[in-house]
Length: 469
Image 1 (cartoon, rainbow, N blue to C red):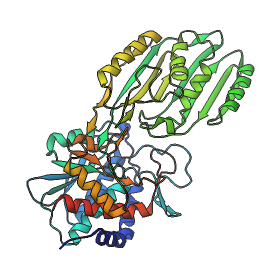
Image 2 (image 1 turned 90 degrees about the vertical axis):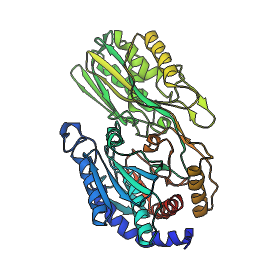
Image 3 (image 1 turned 60 degrees about the vertical axis):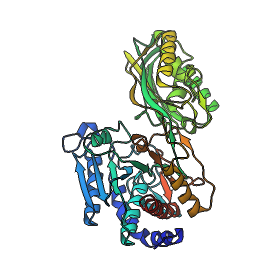
Image 4 (image 1 turned 45 degrees about the vertical axis):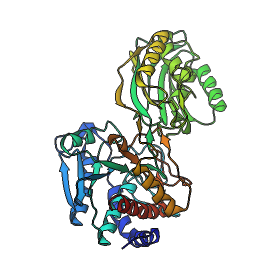
């Protein structure tokens, strides 16, 4: 029996209430990595472990074969054959920073959308993909290869979860990850973190910077930054800060004075580090203000953040800009910064296309650090450029499935984000965000369109059916 897109759409529509009922308790789990509570039983803290337990218990209840791989990751298995199709999802989320209109860890339906941290990244897509498996089984279909539905718990940080998983489990022959956009992502930029560091006191003719902090994750544009300054010029600094604030309406802030101490708290707008131009980096704005003052040797630190990195999202001021016609440009996100009165650090998350490489970028960064009299740390969390050619049968099948379901044109695309797809040589990202959908990840009020959730369930069922016939 053949199955048409309309068949899968009808089946997906019929299961949506059950899907949402299973998704709600998963959204309710605050599955943010917490190293302060990590243990052998919970390598990334209790939240990610609880989310993994929830999904494996759900699959076991539905009579799928499951395995917990040392609490780092899990797998739901179905089908037989020599080949393995991987479906790679993650259950961890970034912290719910900023101001939310709904409880961040409560699945809230409103105006045709589902709100909550993880709804679009990546718990909602994971549940759509899981229900696609259920639809296939309920239709009596027997896949002619093994399907490994792989569940990670540390995607938003270091990916240790799947590094550990693949030490013990087989690599899929081909795979997709429902953790990006439709119609497909078959190219992903290389990426890494690196620190600029400085040691010394921040004392000059305008006073002393006691502390300067902001950001929580390198892969998020920081939406907050704060500093405390000891200065005899508090009144004039306050006036000048107000003028700066009036000239920069993208940020909001508060200023408090107590004797000779001035404390400034800045609020910007968070965004994913793959598109730093979509956010408002609170730290670069605050550092730009401070860079106009004399804090002696600390001037290099504040100049880097407030002059070189302010509004420069593509690495031009650091000399690392590069652009590829398929994969786009270099991007630079100053994600975490701190100064405690004696030591300062700025952590950059850098993403790059095929037109350059890690060694070239590092050589140019060393040159920039030397020029600015700053120290450059070692690169961390490095992931190389990943690309599956557009004529690969995996890419062709997934694009065809998308076209058949939506009636839209579809072509290859690359992104600056990193998905688990890059872990599999023939791996791509596939949805679930539709091209015209306003879906925000890593920001307050994360949500997805319920219509997109239903459409993705049907597309995933059909895609898996076609790939495993």
